[in-house]
Image (tube, rainbow over all chains, first blue to last red; front, side):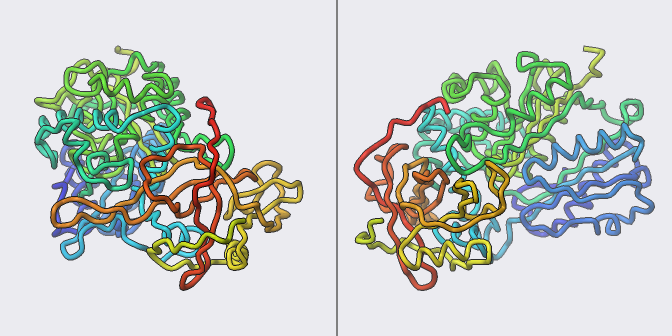
Length: 375
Length: 149
């Protein structure tokens, strides 16, 4: 994990190279041990297969760029785990880096882009970037199930409380539902405090065999199961756009592989590009019935001391936004027991989600501090 | 189609039709909302090359009746002013046309807060500076939508 946030003096490839180097040192390995590399570029692009050359890595046995937008990081872990199990490579670096914040002109998110075809029409009428599209999704959830803006606010409040225990979080001042309601509109029904922040930085994780991981410098984090789910919403009658996410597919698959159910999950690290995304994901994972996510989060269940600790580092809303590496990195910290003031116990079963596009792409992994057989 | 409604929704960038959706804007130019229809009569979304119902790729652009129901909407705000507040710059809706497909478009509405899903929408057209684009305005009736789709 590099310096994160408003770090304006580095390019995505510099962040990526630094992240891999830090991960290797953290594990007690050297770059020579890395024989596989999965690369995920962000909004600003700038990294790809050339990262091998930039790192001076020779004779890799596995190299690919992976793109599933917000679902990428979690999916990369599953691809790497499969490759290690198959013997395709032994130590695989999975890296994401992005630098959308720029000194001269703010964030690259929400900028107008040269488009053609239908997307040029949608941009022309104001559907620029993710904010208004997630607003359309969130509104549909509200209209259908009666979910309220105050309930979305409860997610933001809980995560800000977690962020207070995270030394690298961007926003740590406590907030209230009133603060959420008073924050300016971005795209109704989404307030500013419903939306993730934008960060520069790079994060890498290493995936290797359990046998090898046990002899490295850090406590191993075990991958118990994984799954993906890509709804392919058809824009017409009966569409579940805004009502059901890919978590309804990826969650049960990952939990079945891990041999657990929602009741067994100790900690959730949910992709939280918006507060609404947390609500719909928790429903689709089965932590609460469909349509009851709003009232559930309003009970305070997600925050410190709650019944379902969720986004325990503050998440993308309060800490840092590095796509799926945000929930994944916090899950690793919690599984290792390195959460300090925010460490949750037990940490036997940690669910991590990645969500990309406008709820279009979804991935889940189940991580643990223990091997499945040693629960 | 009620072509008596005139309104010029704000445009944030240029519409650049390509071969896939060229016929959509040829139709809007003559005041019609057209969509692809397959050989078996299924209506498709505007950038759908294959019928998801029957697999047909034998598609023809046909005029819809230009009426539908409100599925969802958003009031989009601009960058904050000096006092930290923000002002609406556009309202955009998803409409479910009577023929089935969903279409996004600017929504002509005085107050984007007192709407509800299921409200009747009618289609108007704005010729603007480049392509003619559709917009929605409110009709009279409201449909009771099932909460368990």
